[in-house]
Length: 455
Image 1: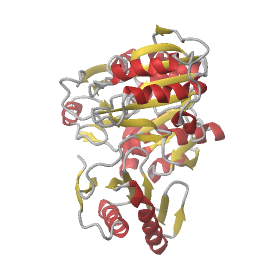
Image 2 (image 1 turned 45 degrees about the horizontal axis):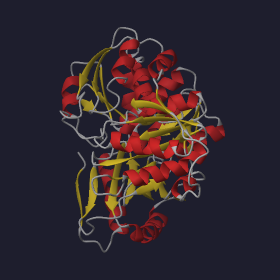
Image 3 (image 1 turned 120 degrees about the vertical axis):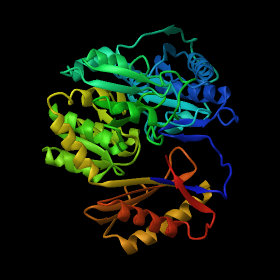
């Protein structure tokens, strides 16, 4: 996999505001405590009387958590503070009371970033609710001052009841990445019967970056050769990357194994984002399930799942498996437990699923581009796709179906000043050619663009 780096642009407007949340660079003043207070004051009208609050392990998270609580409590919202906790645990607690939640995190972004994830009715906010958070509140103060109390989550207990027992005491290496999953993922796996070895438990001594999908995960790769499986999490514990016998699997493989586990528990209706591998959809159909597609993004997948009554789903780009019975968010920790429970006595099934997912090659890359260039890029993509594809889909961005094995998707990023390119084919050479051709078509005048390994 490679990333397109455009040296022409040095710094764009960093603050990102979308249904994925608010994200910005704290050290450069793109996201300040004052901003956090304003967004949370606005969010209060959606939050209601109480909000579950948690944070990841970033250096700025504690400061921004205080600002978030101040904004919410000034509008009369009571705070249930979970402290340092994975994002899925906040979603789970909000889900149990059908209420609101807030996570101070920017997920897999670099450490100097931070952000806010908003939860309403136990799910992430949607496109209809986002403007309420972004607009300046007209209310100067709430009817009362909200109270704040420290709370605990029963996430691990709840997840164990869903997963059951992993027979045979599987040996699992867990790469925490210095994130919030430290006190949760290993405990969950041990509770279902696994033997765990922890890697990169502390942020200060962590040897890898925040995004396990981009990092080479060398420590985990080495450790996994002596284990039954290796799992790596991002800083807020919702992303999961699998390493099997020294091989780092793709994010789509994570989702595929989660889907396989869901099929074994009886799930038959699924929603996948439009950028998820064909191989995952094939796995669902071969298992007797049915599948529909949604726009990219966890919140879009969840919206489609709720609307259709789907039992499970996710997005391949983030390895984001979602089980609607348990959580309305991608849940890497739950997925790690479900996958671990498949290891003993069913190794052939696990290997069979991995082999089927490996038959397709996925490449995800991006073109760094200022926002005012995006329309022109999409127009050029449209022309290229209509000339080279049998079908063009505009569900999210613009997607060209080349044949039954191959497709390419071009869409604006929700989290960066970039245009994302995703492609799939039945061979790496062909997939790389598709990406190269479409990149040349959408950036014809930019001689500064170059490709580098993504790690």
